[in-house]
Amino acid sequence: MAHADATITVDMDQFCTRCRKKGAMQNGLCILCATRTTMEDLSMGGRTKGNPKARHADEQAQPPLIPMSREELDEAAQDLAGQIAELEEMEADHAAQRKTMRDTRNALLGTIGAVASTIRSHGR
Ligand SMILES: [Zn+2]
Image 1 (spheres, helix red, strand yellow):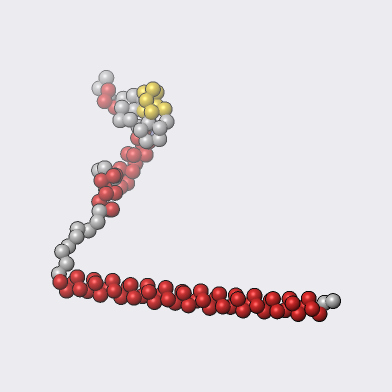
Image 2 (cartoon, protein in one colour):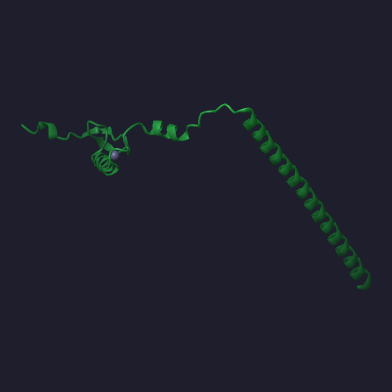
């Protein structure tokens, strides 16, 4: 019994914590997932270590807020003002476009109406 430590015990009443299939070993994984995990660990060179949620949080972490100098604040305000001006210009532009389209549509409707009444008066 020198190799007792190498014995793999699969408990068929346990579910794999990874794929939820029946039959898990002491570490909570089925043989397939245990093998896969081992292979990943080997190929990733240990980069999969650590809590995935913690890694995700690190990636999502916002950069710390750095206090802005007076000049930087002024510059940011200028930027914002410029963007607001751009937005207002865009809105005015779109309003003008909508008016043009409405005029075109009304003109077209007028033409259709005129043509229709011409056809009607000549169709008898
Ligand atoms: Zn599994």
